[in-house]
Length: 65
Image (cartoon, rainbow, N blue to C red; front, side, top):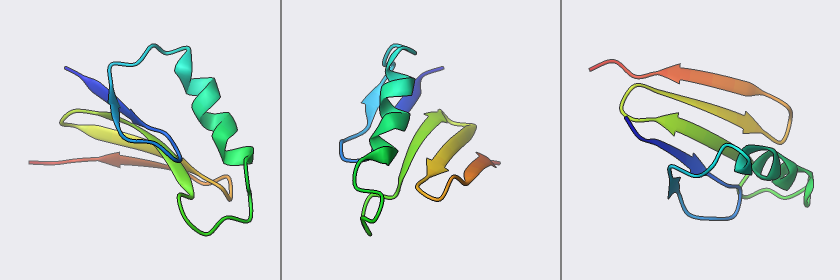
């Protein structure tokens, strides 16, 4: 099963190395007052997604078929 990361300002990337996750989280420190692109996410197709927002909220979603 593939996983995808969605950086704050970029397009979704498939099967990126796990070393890219801390870099992606640090993107949230850039322009904390920005109104657009307020979160980053990692999704595991087709079952789940975890996202982190500028406010420090972490959301885990489990998708059911």
